[in-house]
Length: 161
Image (cartoon, rainbow, N blue to C red; front, side):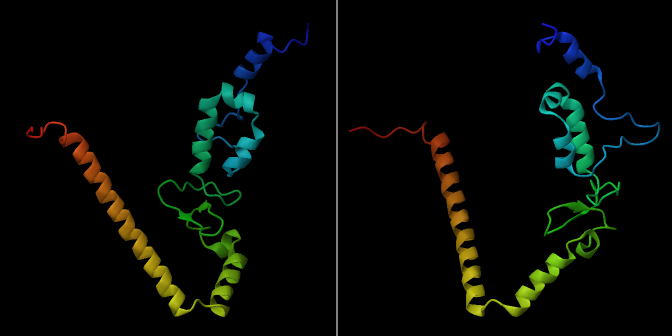
């Protein structure tokens, strides 16, 4: 019975222990990574359930940092999102060549140059895009018409036979 999983002393130790090492005075907490998924993989799900506020604070703080390794620059106000890797970087590491997406961009640009789209295909894509815009506008108009009928139509009565 000493290994009983429902023992309260084990869970109280988990609740009392800090989730991350405490920060030194005047400095931010070092979470060991700038990647949110890496941070969450390190934390067992039971601990996440117990200390959800601490985990959410850590995730929010890590999400506001540059995703370049060892860079601690905040990107909450000003940063750049990479089109290729979908990560957020500070201005210093925002260029794809700096943070490691340079080869992917070269490959994409080379493909565009060697295999350009014909003008007919580009026109067709623009026509489809315009048709989608018109359809969305029409659906929105129809939706507004239905909501106005539902709210305004109940008070009127038909003249009887």
